[in-house]
Image (cartoon, rainbow, N blue to C red; front, side, top):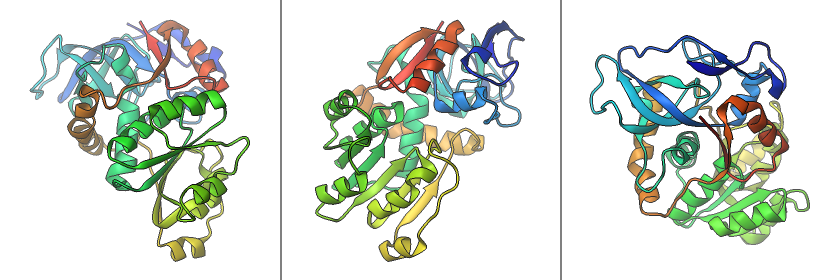
Length: 325
């Protein structure tokens, strides 16, 4: 088969479409013929040499895909050859075929085409696990998501609205904020022109945000804690703004607040399977009912993955960028 390889770490030009050995499913795994994958910022870090795949997983980038089952390993039940699926991966999505642990496999949701389904596994698993399974966002609470127009952000807006939360977003342009409003965001903050701490306090009569989903890390740590409401929960899922920040423990104590930080890629298969099962139970019905939809900015040929990486680096996109075969 062919896959996007990274012979040497570097810029987008480091991505090379090359012939590689065919994968073979082992016990508890299925082989998927990939129709589409999606680009995540973790892929950019892997390309740059900063985020290696977990031991034993595919060396090729790509944390999610959609396609058709073409082979089934021993001990797998409930799936048949030809099934249209999407999957959460530890790597290998930028390829013609990929092996998937059966617990990370999902049917394509009703009403979603096969290509577009590639936009779903990573964002739904990340948002549901962090915002609902860990931070327990509840109806009536205020939820802030940084980067509201990103793949994660557009999904987080919709899921938070679906459970009855008030949604605040940050984004860097009027166009992006307008799109967030269309998805249901209530409080729109242009981080280039406004202080999100002040804006959230003003919009909530000083109470603050009950749950914050943060992709920035160190750069926003102190301000996020300032923004939290009493009993607030800050979920950190990225470090675009650095890895080391100063945390005011006194503020955290006074607010009886919590800070959590998770990554999805390196979790054990059993934990991923639990998250995927929860997504199928809670998110898939919302998609089938039309309350939540994947947001795709554009599709790019998989062999030209470098172009897709440049789109993400420019941050001009809204929603997901897909790679299609």
